Length: 134
Image 1 (cartoon, rainbow, N blue to C red):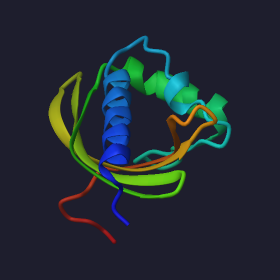
Image 2: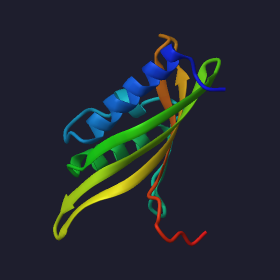
Image 3: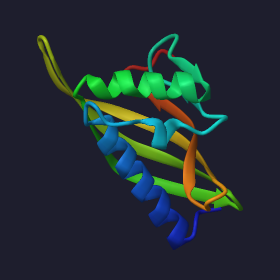
Image 4: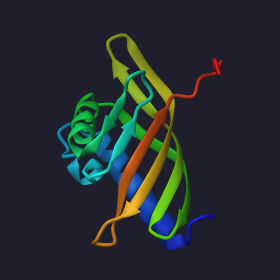
């Protein structure tokens, strides 16, 4: 079921804050990816991180690259203390020989902490391909 307006606004705010942090080298990523049971799957082969130590470490590395993460459309569903979102956006990649806006889709799963604040429980990232193999 689609999330109510309050939950949608809270998840959207968390996604925007997370994407801003991912775009800002030196940001402490623990507030975003420090949940005890966090899981992250990136868009590259072998990009799988489980638990806060791995997840925060991976996010710190990614944020150090100076990429610009931008969500364009966020759709949120919820049921009780669990919410999930489809985040359609892009990552502006600038590095040696590359200046490209790469489409990026994130599937997020969120749970409420004891403080009633939403936390990332899962990040699944993908780079949609024009000519997908599957």
